[in-house]
Image 1 (spheres, rainbow, N blue to C red):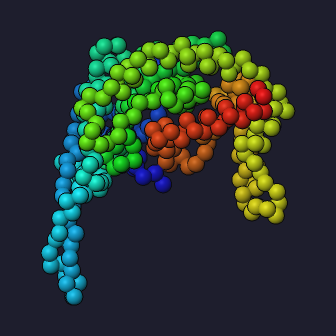
Image 2 (cartoon, one colour):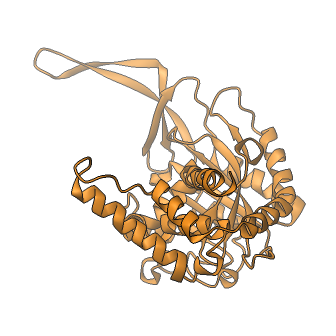
Image 3 (cartoon, rainbow, N blue to C red):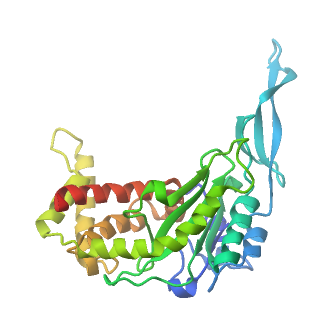
Length: 343
């Protein structure tokens, strides 16, 4: 089950530019949204993100250890001066416990004020935003209003994913990403980690306005040509049927009878069959079969739309983009492509 209820996903995530996307998000349920829908035909207003998602602050509270007597009753508390709790100021929900050196990065400051600077200066728009895990993790994506067309017939939308957390799971991050509108997939193909990401740890030495936001502002306008070139490069690389089979067998190894349980063999056989069907017949993949782009698209689309259970797909896809799992999966596909096709 998803750690977020359907109602949470329909009220604590905002989806913009739906008219250009041409479809609703996976989690969309009109009956769970109340009087105010979470889908916007155009860009999401900054004030809506602030009002609907980031309408609280994280605050520090002391940590105490209870000392019990022989009967098990707590008789006194000792404050742990080298630890502190981070809680919401509206409902006192504890989001994390940290050493005293931990610094709070408020969502409004790090994800709205910095992102607003980008929008004001560069005419970008808020494409999506969310606040999950009871306020512990949040993100905002900003994008160019229009898709970029490629000679491969595969449009893309570059954007910056800005995210941070109050539970210690994510540094404040501005990451270069692109979206495939034909399937609503998040892709990272060929984008180097060192040139595509800016991170700031939650330490006392982090400043209120990080240099990384300036780096991110430069990234989104330099990355458009790079992304188009990458898509076109992948689309121009031919992949034979034999090479495709070898790639599937490498990335989805079935294993030998007797070495692994039959259930594991069946699971891998099923995944291989689904991938082969998608590669040849799925409208989100098949137009690019026979190319490296089609290979990447098959595995990426499987991750987004098939793998796992539907009841937590929206949260899982969002978190996989935030924590880098999708990027790692794309990189593995490209690694195998280089070994089996380009070597």
